[in-house]
Amino acid sequence: MKVHNFNAGPSVLPKEVIRKSVQSIIDFNNSGLSLLEISHRSIDFLEIIEKTTYLVKRVMNLNDDYSILFLQGGATLQFSMVPYNLMKKVAAYLDTGFWANNAIKEAKKFGKVKILFSGKEKKYTYISKNYEVPYNVDYFHCTSNNTIIGTQMKIFPKTSVPIVCDMSSDIFSRNLDFKQFGLIYASAQKNISTAGMTIVIVKKNILGKMKRKIPSYMNYKIHIKNGSILNTPNVFSIYTSMLTLEWIEKKGGISVLEKKNEYKAKLLYNEIDKNNCFENKIHQDDRSNMNVSFFLKDMNLKNEFNKMWKKENIIGLDGHRFLGGYRASIYNALPLKSVKFLIEVMKEFERKFSS
Ligand SMILES: *Cc1c(COP(=O)(O)O)cnc(C)c1O
Image (cartoon, rainbow, N blue to C red):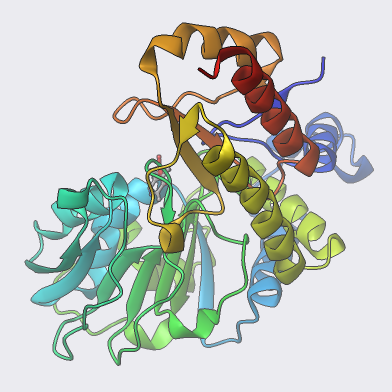
């Protein structure tokens, strides 16, 4: 059955990646064993980690100043792992929405948090560019893409302190100068792989400045020393990430995907802006190219619209439970034709119900 998967996460993956990952479960590299049956310390698996590490660095154009880790605990564990390792006294955060807020809550357990900007009063519909990162904070934390409300940071501040960025929902979707970041983390289930694995990209020289004792699993340096196999990692999710990275390279790399993502987003926002039945509430400059949120202008039409898209095998269009409305997540692997299909459905809805 043909479905159009707009899920926010776990979400759409390239068909080819799914096929190959399934094959690895049945018979990994013609070994007669499943990927799920081999040791995480076997040569076969070490090669997978090595290749995935290499590919992350290559698509992001990073050198050996950076370490790549494959951890568990989701982006959520990073909310506390970051301050555990990096916060001596005070860190600066941007409050751009739900996930940023969760990061702030955890950081406050470790020291003082300076909020440089909060979008709360404007319901997180825009992201300020007018703030300055103090020179004397331990790090600056931001969320590059706000998955729930649908905003995205287009520029990052110039600062001498390490920039820590939660890129869970837009990693590998656009080309940035990744060397401007001290630490990037992203849970895999949005744009990379399956749930249960988080990629952490950390510049080695920002670590080791902390006096507090850090539990082993929470300690980046220990993971670096152990090559992400301090304990048994999520073998399957790491393997699937490798496949996605290979797919990204085959497509021409993240700059090519970025163009496609911009185009998909532009088509959809254009339709929302032009369609009499819908509206998007995000400040033009801050609209996300990954998560497109929109609302019905007339809430009385809710049942009609829901019936219509569900009948067309469109999946995952409901907005986040905290926000309501609709959200189309249009990650790397979501085909342009799914976006065009959704637009057709919205047009049809307008023809039928526009007053
Ligand atoms: C989904 C998401 C998270 C939470 O990820 P978990 O893997 O569930 O911990 C954090 N930050 C952002 C931006 C997200 O989109």
